[in-house]
Length: 480
Ligand SMILES: *Cc1c(COP(=O)(O)O)cnc(C)c1O
Image 1 (cartoon, rainbow, N blue to C red):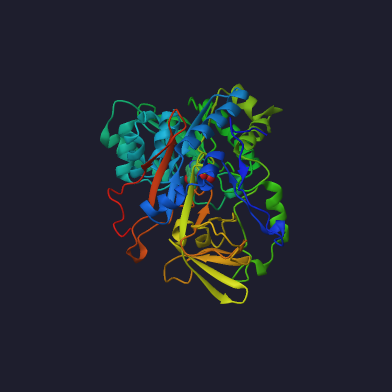
Image 2: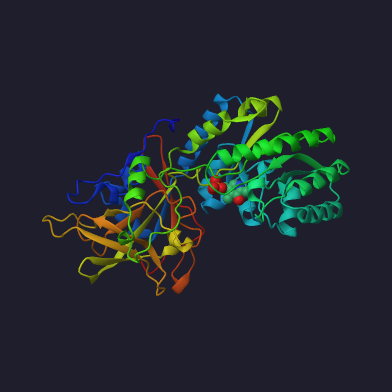
């Protein structure tokens, strides 16, 4: 499989913990730079949490640059024309958007606010792409003014956009893609089926002064490359139909959904096979999980996608080239792979029953939010003790992890996590790889707790770590 350049992910260190079954342990894959901060002997992480508060989100923007390079390596190997758009909704970090812009990738924006962040980061406006399904008139107007690429989700959106384009009366055409709804997702609210797609194409043939039709878009749920290949096969006839009508599609945009590996895949498989309702404090194994330890990472996924048979005996890559199409991808989660961790300080450790312990974290499940989707973040938090104990003062314990709110549902981890010794107030719990939809998607100021801080780590030429705020807070939490 394709490795990220110059780094190999490590399994988080863990000294042997005797009686714990290996199948109960989900050690996160960690980039070495992150690992060295988490396990450093200077207590840097404790100091940072002391300074910025808990929970603390720490972002490594350079990881995104590295992920971009790794994708480009795969795309270049297949010799396809390509465009990468960073799906900016995955994380609120401005640092990540900035690095995307510096790496000369486009940004997929779903709101005027995401668009503004990308513009502030200095994006060339033509590299903006907007795929969201419910764009407002104001957002449309801003996209039109910037010459952004707009993925039209429906006939209704096309009507609105057309009316607005007429009203504004620009002297250059507005760039559009049409969002396709593949046959397998007939009930989805996103995109257009064959009839609507053809109707839009026919209309576009008469509107060439106002619209520049650039191609097709889709974005699917699920994480298999096969469903994307199938969607490309379905779109092939619309590419031909569009060209027969005198339109000139040049882009096939397959959206995001490239998978991230959080856990080594064998360990993950062993865990899934062995897990049991008694591994959860509520006695319930969630019905579904993100594939945290899937068989392939994003680069291998992209490679398989490009190699897969597409049409007339051609692979996807060859089909794209034969048809002179540019492949666009909009990775969110996979571009943010390894780009952040979330650190919670432990407030209290409480015994509930002989063998059940709950850890109260200073922070809430809104900052590690998988339980709000009736699922679970299947990655063990890493315990960083506040003090290195001289004597062995604790028995191994299984504990679940609750947030600091009074909501019964505010549980960060329902799963009973094995700790080699009972954690203590002041210790830290580090959740690895939270940049993708975990750390800040649901964050809020419930109980009037201030928003969690976000800081970013960069390294100078000498390898020295530089830390700076990466959020909109102007001042520190003065309760600290
Ligand atoms: C969310 C989204 C993406 C990014 O998806 P990931 O799974 O994070 O890669 C890309 N395109 C569209 C249209 C989206 O809605």
